[in-house]
Image (cartoon, rainbow, N blue to C red; front, side):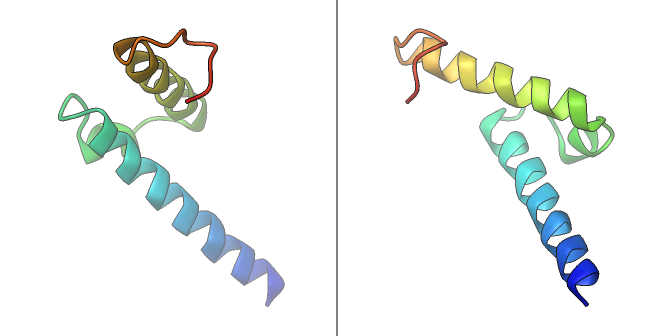
Length: 65
């Protein structure tokens, strides 16, 4: 049961991550685009989007929001 619970939690986390990326990308990424990415691609894209918003707000990319 613990294994199935873990799989369910992982599925929910991935769904949340994909949805956030689509919303934060403000239309430049579609749900299909993000679902077709590998995990390393999604992580890199999320980092770049975060750095973009930090730069847009006037903060250096290394500074936390």
